[in-house]
Length: 318
Image 1 (cartoon, rainbow, N blue to C red):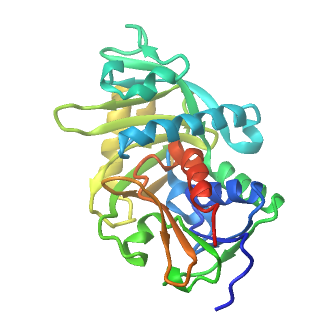
Image 2 (tube, one colour):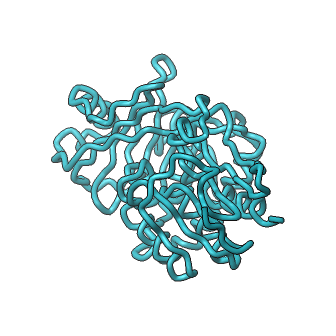
């Protein structure tokens, strides 16, 4: 096993967490290589609806700061939406109250109770980052390359066998087998993409009786409709019956959705864990593994905050 210099880092995993972490490390002067099993365009990150909002992620005591750090970055990136894929878009979170959220919510600019004309019920209005992942992921990769990093398609089966002074584990659901960490489990999400009939705002709503979530996000490639949250389901095959119910629920809010032409279906497996694992562990030979995985349905939301913390943990190496 060949080990590089003390600045040498291998980031394992090429989704939004891995690429963002690699960018932060490279821009801080580290020699960074990303080893990924598949291109970013085929990762779970690529199929995300990608609205900034802490969703299915713990611990709340840390998530708020990670999310707010990321929000600040996305607000800057939104000045160049065609390049970065990030836009600031208005919308409402149905069935959510400010007093039900953590302290982080008070620091989200403009977050307020929705007016009666904006939502028929209790809701919050916000202008939040909505990220077009087919644009954002390649942009992250190019930013990494400009900073001197590299991306290689490689399968890793043993973190200790990676030849680098620092190994950063950003493998998401893959950590279940790689670490191994049985605490990481899939929560399946299915989406439907339709031609946008002219909708410019996003919406999320949760049926309190059934726990079923409904949302739609206007993306450049179409209106993304959702969704599902199926615990411990591994199937990546879209279910036509589920897709039909998604369209029906979304059309209850905006009837024009019912007639919109379907462009495609997406399925992703959120890497949920009881809490994000963001910590440093020494290897027997003095090298270091930094774990950064288990971000559930909020990897995009906390990507920059977690990347900065991972870079701090990777900083001091004997």
